[in-house]
Amino acid sequence: MSTPPNRRLVFLLNAGHRRVQRWIEGRMAAEGGLTAAQSGVLFFLGERDGALIGEAADALDLAPSAMTGLIDRMARAELVERRADAKDGRAMRLHLTDKGRAARDTAKAGLRGVNAQLTEGFTDAEISVVSRWLTSLQTKFPKGDPQ
Image (cartoon, rainbow, N blue to C red; front, side):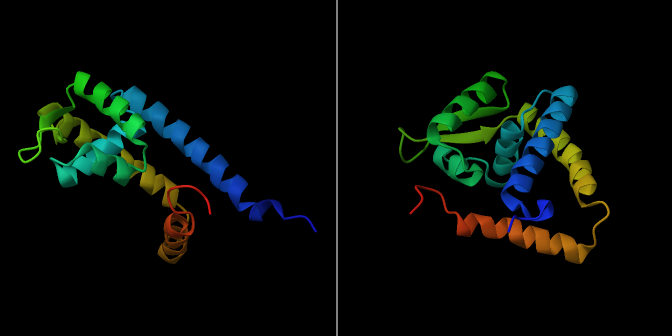
């Protein structure tokens, strides 16, 4: 028995993710040049300014090597700055710059509209179920190698 098209969850999740990601990237590029990953860093640092690079990488589910390149680009764009940790000079902490805070505010305003578009036509109860399901994926499929 084949799976009905509306129950091919892996396909639907991937296709939906790609479509939304491309749309957001295009919109963000048109409105200020930020990527979704850069916005994620700005949002994280807005809550945890001064976090270690590794903490930001964990929060965004990025590999340390990917995070290093991302932060390099963001530092060149003057969105963030690295500062040595006061207790461990080898560790680097990330801080928002004024330009980074302004970019964060712009990105946050844009994403409010995206969230409104994503939830349009659905009840709060339906969105709660979708949110619970998407959140459950993080525990059902933890980081690291599959076991």
